[in-house]
Image (cartoon, rainbow, N blue to C red; front, side, top):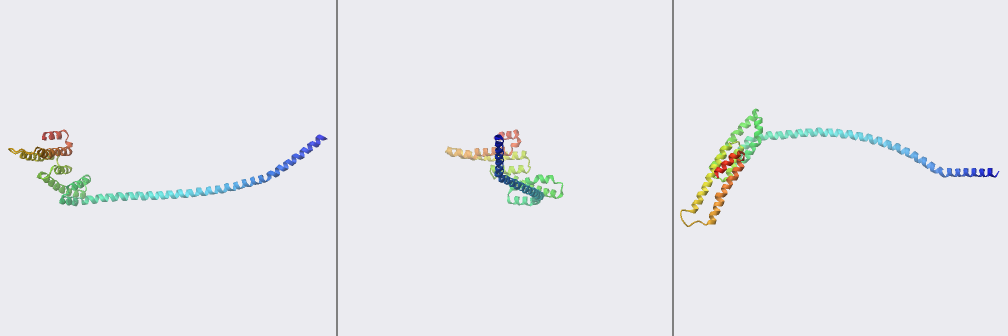
Length: 255
């Protein structure tokens, strides 16, 4: 009997504990249930937001693609227009070239005239089979022939110094004048100037005493004859370097 009574007592105690446990955790269970229900609602809202975001992204992507296509088309058109504009400027330069050359020759701007001619020469030769370009080329050839004649006259007059004559030779070479002929003329004119410097030095020495001041005489010789010879050698090397060993031999023979 005692054992049975004790078992009944334990069962009642266990039942009481279970009721207490259920009561104590009921609120937590209800709260967890509410939390799960709320999480389901939140996830459903999040899915709806993600669907709307995906839709918006698709719209933005499509809009961006259309903008890119429009800009690409405009970029291509702008590039074509820029190319046409550059071509028109080149054509305008070619059609104005004869008048530009004439003006430069009249003003004595020989270097600018040669640069203009060099800038257009390749194009004129390439399209010389076209009548309009052929006419421009013919006019330019007449003008450059007159320009070359004036440069040769200026060079042969010999009134200018070595740098000025070297500039004339450089421009004549750029116009396609024969380098061999210009080389000979350049050395001939240089020889004339240097011989004149020697005669001036001999005149300073005089036929009889008193002798000139040594320092002054040396200074005249260095700045006149020796300086002129150095200028000639430097200009020759710069102008006729393309002649190679033959040009070097001519310069050595000249010196």
